[in-house]
Length: 352
Image (cartoon, rainbow, N blue to C red):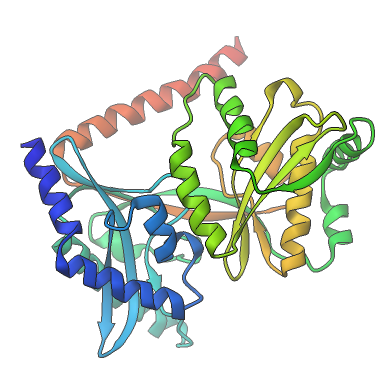
């Protein structure tokens, strides 16, 4: 049975029809700049493999009005649609509309319903989970279809046209950390072309938490090659006078936004102010491109404290899910209970 399912998933993704849909979508991505970075075909090719993803397409005549790309894999005898690694959002793209609100909502319902019809026809999934881009503020058609929603957050600096004003809006401790990094600790930020600079400190970050890096260096290299070809990535490294790297950021961008995709820091040097300095340099870089800056959201409390200190706007986005497999639903329910228990333990200990 597992082998059969794997073959069925791979057969669907490698079918002639799926390849035709990917070809159509690749052409759309070249022409339509409103499609977010993480939903672009070149990004999906890099993080899913060229035949590891598919797309539901809603067309009217020759015009594509909506799309829903997705990454599908076999798991426990069923096909699972999930988020690829190092990918903040996916979800539907709807062609921008200038219609009045009531008509636009009706259009969204029609297009999202058609996308779900096509998705569920193309892929008999046991579980679906995607983070929708924050530009999608209406998930009601998915609710009517039995999907559920959890709100997640990212943190964004929208207007970087006046960096003096942005600097003044930083919390005082962040400005202090930046000054300390450049002054007392003698750090400077350099642009690197060596992925090894990122890998080293990124690995140290996960090791400090007792975790394995959730993606391979080969995976990052494939993604980096795709972004470098598109000239939409930069590696920033904070280095001291002795040449020791304290922290690194990996930035990517589309037509409107620079994202901090991943980062890392040497845990033995985490009080040097390197991460605050890197974030400030990343913000300055985004400003030089005339784009906004997205800290690429995290639900971790320690990360939230840091990123909101930069005067960011908290931006909600939807995690949309649906489970039709009883086995996966049971496993997910147990996981939610365990996760809730883990979050309650520190609070109980704090009260003690």
